[in-house]
Image (cartoon, rainbow, N blue to C red; front, top):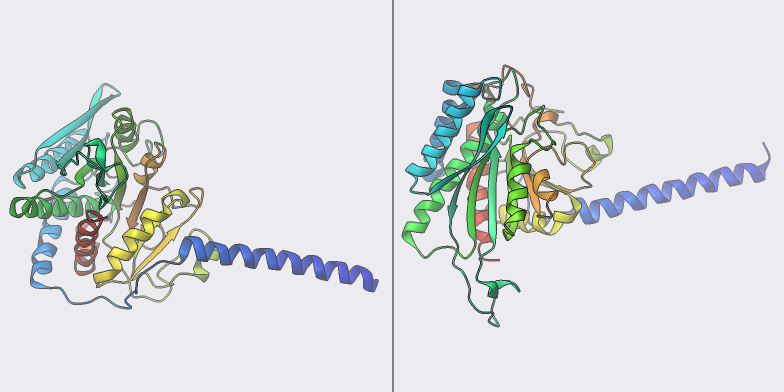
Length: 357
């Protein structure tokens, strides 16, 4: 082959390689480089965290052990889960509300409970928000879907997320009784119908809920979706990724909790990761990636993105780690309750920190 032709091929390949490297560097710098110091292994549970662990275990057992599979094909169990969630919020001293909608002649319910923030009536030099003077405190939503996929009792997916939501709601209700109301409104929501065939459709419970928030002009400053947060593994190669390239940047052992957002929610993601890592006792990884990357949109935060709200997902990346994902073996005994507890304890500190920003 002529040397000039070889030279053209070489430089063409070199240019392509440079572009690929540049894209990867930019992706890492803007989407994967997260603030805060990570830890390498889980820490011990405090006495308070031991109590939290047993609370989480009991909640998961109630949802996935006693109630079991809960979806539109098991409508009585779906309603039993809704009743349990509503009762748990009420017993914590919170006022609850059912946000219902009709589907196929049956009523489905999103369940919410709020701790109202303190409204501001004027903008001051020290105001924490440029919109502080409109009298309406911003809202932080912490949510998880309570339905399970057809054929599964849904311990990790998503009994773990619901158990965490209930535990966090109870702890912040107790804090409210001991001190002044938070600046921001904390809204705890359990969403219905996240699983197929409603997944990423107009009948998804969280999408209907988010649309109604938009119609009311709710000032949602953050939405945190708790999605499959109870399974961890120290086995080599226990962690996979939706794209082979991501494995270049992240661990191959599934012993961490993940924080995921779309590109538009990058600021929120970095803020949450900084707060989580400040006192975390469990490894964590984060990524702000385009929503089309498989896995990035796979939960209720997607619904809030569709309505212009920032949102993130907290997840153990179940489809890429959990051997029992979407199966009949997704039972309460499969969860690692110690590390699950460390995630929830860390999220409690995140919510406290978000209230100060």
